[in-house]
Image (cartoon, rainbow, N blue to C red; front, side):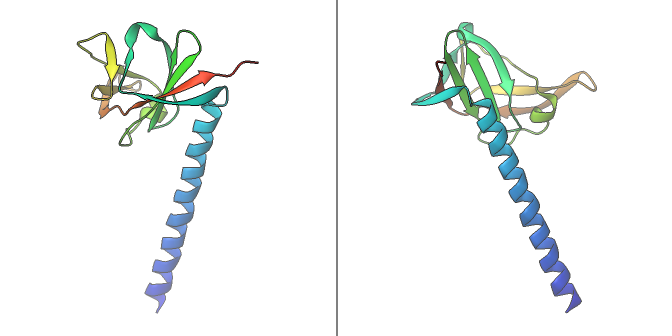
Length: 131
């Protein structure tokens, strides 16, 4: 009997903590996008020479801020460990574009070594809001 109660309590604790993590992740994404409006366009690639800066939101989301008023949110198909903590990554490409088939590698600042490598997803276009 005690084992069943303990198992139920652990299951509830896990469900509750994962619920908070999901809400926190959604809040971080919403905050990063608060100055933008979703256009509905989705791209497989973005031009490297148009990228002005990047903002790592968490282990699953990167905002590519473009020159001009556009930005692209890339939702990685799988969580990329330590990306949200390190907030830095590198990539190698053989064209003038960064595409959903390309791989990023987390830069581990504590040891100055490469962290995990992860695939990118599609680029969801956003337009900067006018004041």
